[in-house]
Length: 120
Image (cartoon, rainbow, N blue to C red; front, side, top):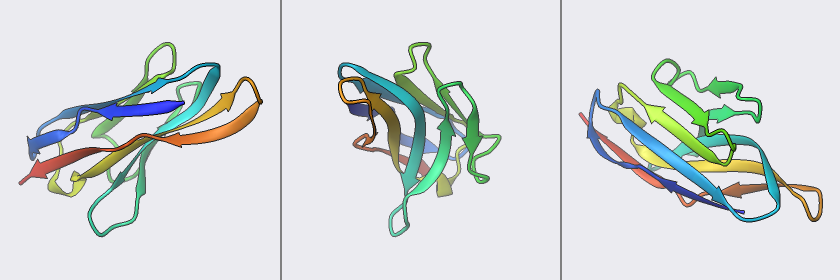
């Protein structure tokens, strides 16, 4: 399984961006998916996660401003980011937990990251 993230860019404070993350591969079933971010000099932190059943959880710093969602097939992840702040600037990574059908093993995969820069 591979994850391809896109949608990052430069935006002014108060603006919006939508990140996407598409999973590709064969014979797998994704369970939970999540967005993490890592600002320069900081540790990677969880931004939002969503279960296979669509239950979402958010970091306190983004609650009410960001919305995580998945498409009906469950293999594409989105993060709608509104009311962006300078402190949201970071590289955003998507993450997925999945089951490989051939082995029935639970595995984890990361996307390559997409950079978000919010100018104040």
